[in-house]
Length: 208
Image 1 (tube, one colour):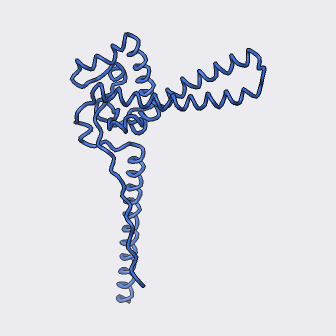
Image 2 (image 1 turned 180 degrees about the vertical axis):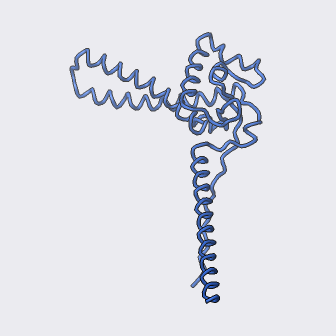
Image 3 (image 1 turned 30 degrees about the vertical axis):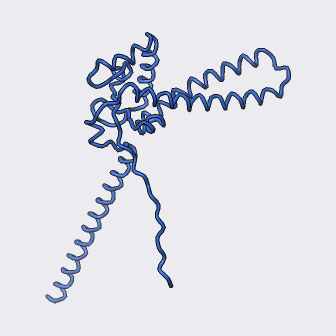
């Protein structure tokens, strides 16, 4: 009886160890999945970017010009498409032309705001920023900013252009090169590390 009891006890102990190991494996997998989700939601910001050099006036102006060119190109294509569609109506009423012009103007404003806010609040880089290797990030080093602060930053850009671009020129006297929109939204623009290129290589196939 003692042998059978010892065998049952050993089996129960082994089963308990197996259950504990499985529980630890599940907990580790859940932790890795949680870290992966957090990493996908938060863009990677290197230590160099957190403590690196701040982008200058010329670099930011070129990036901003690239973004405006892209937005205006899309707006031009949409305008041409709408003009071709309305050309079918040889004599469209005046109220229709006015309504279309108002809709297109509203769409343009919403499009340009959404363009900048979407990129700032996700990756921190617009296409123009990627070309110039700069990034918009939180002034405290917390990574990218949220949509609300993105809208606030865009409003700051509008205000910065009103007094003869004085809101942009104040960065020349700021140790962190912050413009008016950066001060309002609590952001900085830093030089970003270039994205690593993925080089595809052909895998040699062993001869049969």
